Length: 223
Image (cartoon, rainbow, N blue to C red; front, top):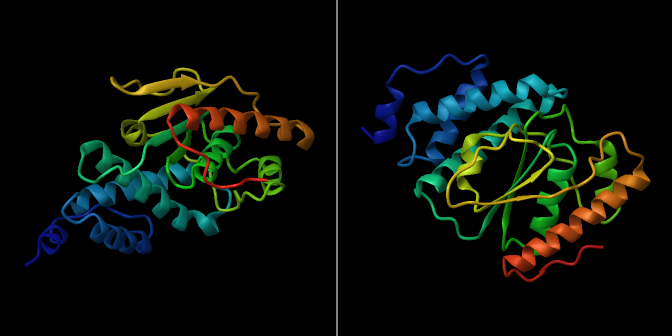
């Protein structure tokens, strides 16, 4: 009997929806040899519960749960040294994860051409990405259409090489040996599109400066 089969024979957790259990089993195969099935199930349930509190579009809740749980488990495995971190990891944290941190993460991915991996999170996640932020990024050819607000979790902080906060107070835990920065940026919540554009451009300038500090050349043109 395989190691995964043995773990599946153990008592499992109670899932609110049957398909979540099936998805957790599928996800466990990705992390076989890294995490026990019970750990994967717990992360799926925790991620589902966390997103359920703020999700307004239930049709996407399952897919977002698996994406969120997968990213958290990947971060935890990176922090434990169980899988490699081929590029620097940057975590952007704002309050709602609906504007500033989402834009910064997308700019980092695009401008670095994948030479830096970015995550984002919020200390008090909103129900959805700010529509004006989505529109402002779309104007320059960047798509936030599949993004969703995510709560700040300990695992993504542990996996980060650089943690950049944006007006989220003391919500982010501090770990020795990590680099922390605080960017003073206007919160785009409630602002007209014209002002959101200025916030967007300010964030881009900050990201470009950060990439320079990390020794990463801009790889992708952004309008």
